[in-house]
Each structure stands twice: as C-alpha cells, then as structure tokens.
Length: 486
Image 1 (cartoon, rainbow, N blue to C red):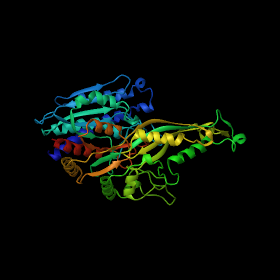
Image 2 (image 1 turned 120 degrees about the horizontal axis):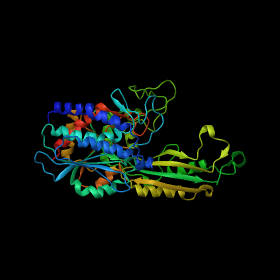
Image 3 (image 1 turned 45 degrees about the vertical axis):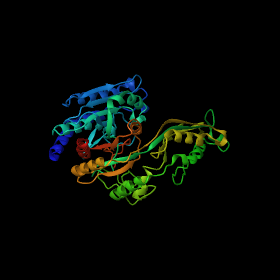
Image 4 (image 1 turned 180 degrees about the horizontal axis):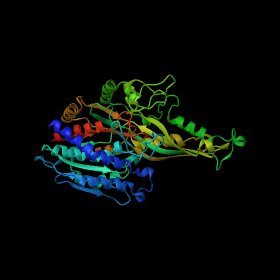
C-alpha cells in the first residue's frame, strides 16, 4: 500500500465525516439497557443504530450487504457483509466488532462539558461514548474503503455492532447463534473496543478481566428508629455490611481473600507485562486523576502541589499492570438506603444496600465466582441479619490464544508504518463478554483487540474523550493489518 495515500485518505475521512458523525452521536443519551429499563420506549438505541446504518449505506463499497437485525425483546444489532476483492475468495473472513450503547452520565464533568455535550478541545472529542465505542463501526468501513481505494486485495469483511455491551452483552449469544452461519470461517477478529497504554504506538490487548456485578442488601429493622434510643443495642446495617465485605477482601491491602477468585498468571503474560512496564514506566499509575495532582488538560499527570496527594497500591509499573489485568479487585460502585448529607437525621437506618463490582482474572469462571461470593456473604451472618447477594451477571474474562507469527509480523509492520514504533502487548482491566463468546464460536480465530481508550481518556467517567489524532493513526494501522490477511 502507498502509505502516504493511506494516511491522507483516513485523515480526510475522519475530518470530513467521522468527527461530525461522532459529534452527533455524543448528543444522544443512548444508555445501555442496564441503565435504562425503558430503552425501547425512549428510542435512543434505535436512533444511534439507524444513524450508523444510514451512513454505512451511503458508503461506496461494492457488494456490501447491510441490515439492522432485531430479535423480539432484545436490543438491535447492525450487521454487514462485504465480499473479498482481488480474487482472494470468501472462504474466510475478518470480523469487526463494536457497540453503540453507552454508560450513564456520571457527575464531575468540567464546566461547559457533559456526557451529551460534544466539545472538541486540543484534538480531543469530549462526551460519552465516542471512544467507547461509537467510533468502531465508522472506523471499520473507513478501513475497508482505504484498502479498496488503492485496489489492494483484501479478505471478506463482516461486522457485528451490538447495543448492550455496557450491560454485559446479555442479548449477544442469541445474535451469535442467529448470525454464525453468515459470519463464515472467521480468521481474524478485529475488536475496536479496547484501550492503549499510550498514544505513540499500536497496542494489542492480550487479555480482559471478567466481572461479577451484584447487589448486597443487609436488613436489620423493618423501619428506621431513633438512633439515640437504639444505637448500641441494634447493630448498624452498615457495620454488618463492612464485616461482610471483609470476607471478600482485606480492608488494609485490597487483596481479595476468596481463593476461587484467583488464577495463575501465564508466563507469556508476565513477559508482556514486563515489556509494557518498561515502555510506560510511572505513567501506568500517574494517568489517573489522583487527589492533590494536577488534572488540567495537557498537564503532567504526576505533578502535584505541596499538599498530600493520593497514591496507588503500587508504583512498580509491572506490578501495577498485573494488578489491573490479572488480579481480582473489589469496588463498591453504588449505594441505596443512605440519605443525602443535608437530609440525614438522627435515625438508625433499617437497611444498607451496596452495588458490588468484582473484577476477575481472565481465566476465572464468572458463574463460579458469583456463587463463591454469594456463599461468603450469606453464610453465618452476624446478628442473624437478613442478608442477600443478588448477582446481576457473572461474565468470564478472556485470554487471547497464542498469536500466529503471520499476525505478529503484520502488527509490528503496521505499528511501525503508522507510528514509527513496534506494536506493544498488554492485558486490559475491563470486560468485553463478546470476546469469550466468540472464542467459543470460532476457536481457530486470531484476535486483534485494540482501541483508543488511552491515558486520561476516562471511559465511563466524567470528561471522557476520544483522542482524534490517535484514532486516525489506529485506523491507518488496522487497515495495514487487514490488507495483509490471507
């Protein structure tokens, strides 16, 4: 391929079409069904998938078949099928994956910014969902067009864009069963829903953690009572919840205590973590907005003032990578039964409800982990309180199969041509249930899982952004890889 022509094509496509499309996409509150029970009535998911279909249909790609596939009662998917060129045949295919649903709003956005307020500043598009993962379908067809513009032979390309990934992809298994015969023999999966360690090279995701999400409820009373009359005699539901959480992890270190939730880290992943740690150094932990550190755009994320500032569990880059990719960790992400500060009276509350998020090593079975947590929380409860743990989902993670030499060569070549550096390899701490599902459907497939969620991009949180310059180069790099698949 002519690299200068490839770069010019992808850059022009991003500037003239993709960025304006994503600006419109950010404005739509297309929250995932797990955060919007009335998603069908609200119509936002339908709106973003129809907008994507409209744009895709307008692209001059020979032989493309495109449709929105719907199963009653389930969120819709966008499916495309584009025949091979240059006589390569359609026996095998490259499969693109992405999603169009979004996380909820989250507080803490900068003044003038917001989840549904697109703002372009310093080469970044701020707003919910553009990087996670609204850009994927637009980048996928841009990749195909960039290859075809140079008359370079390429394999058959298929794509599946879902709308419930942020809820754990509960509808996806049925769509995979329905569409598997039409996907063909998938040789390479190009998933564009992951992250990057920096914005300087192509990053390949080697693993994804699993996730157990659930709700812990502790009830002691049938109604609230005067705290002066009852405290000391009636145990606090919050204190009991604290005791129960201590069964899951060590409060001092955060180390998860349940043996069922741990896994041995493969030697290959240790070697890759060491290489990634050498590349990234302290930026592995400095990328986060620690209290006491500078949060201004463009500022050194490690800079801090004279006051005390928060610190990570470890500052060793390799151990930091392993902690967020291959070790379990518990977070409390929500609560109910706690009144706001300005309305909190002297009342001993009847119950405490906490939303738990337990990240799992990639090879730990999500269902088994859910039952282990349930047993630990509901057995031998203090004070005979009424306790329940209801799992929302138990998603098993994903560990990539060994990378074939042909793919590794393509990845390094693509990264050097687009960024001037070799590709880098690292696990990610998030969860994409689709990867494990697809691995079961197509056990012989190779995987290129990558994405634009790099330092400070803050997916799911306030001030989430898409790094436009990196997205352009990533599009260019993936085009180089797809063009080389035979």
